[in-house]
Amino acid sequence: MNTPKHADFFIRLIASFFDTLFLAVPIGIIVYFVSGGEWFDFETYRHNMQLALAGDTRALSTQPQTNLRWELLFEFLVLVVTIVFWEKWGGTTPGKKMVGIKIVDAKNYKEISNKQAITRSLGYIPSTLLFGIGFLMVLFRKDKRALHDLMADTVVIYENSKDN
Image (cartoon, rainbow, N blue to C red; front, side, top):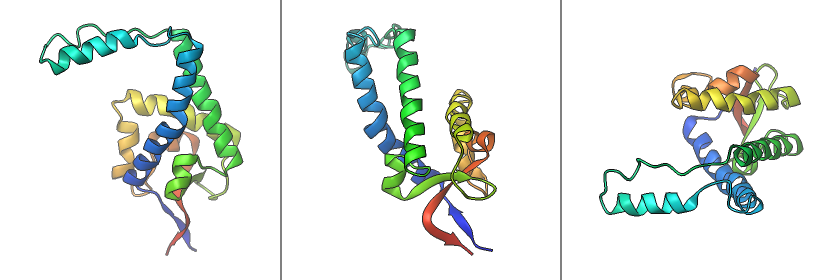
């Protein structure tokens, strides 16, 4: 039986970059302006960058403040928009579509359920909090699955490509 070819770490990284560019950044800009600038303190960030570029070793001693309410709104909107894309585009987002990969159920290689989509999205939290190891697992696993894939019972495959 032919099984679809599992997407490797680097193609997934490229897709993630495009998704950040085309989904997260626009959502972030909207949330920033809707918050009236309360979401993130860009002035402290700009000041820290100037200090760092000037060689000041104390540049990171003061971090920009974020407003938790606006941060949660941003995270929620990214989650919702991502799930909408997965639902409407059969397991893809703009970034995944651009590089020709999609998310499917790990057992039957069919479209993922809403439960899997939500579990997978929430699984990004431990994948990230574990120093990114949840994402790096893709490099070392034969099935190319990340922690969030294991949690949701999903796999990322190349569209229109088969392994023998």
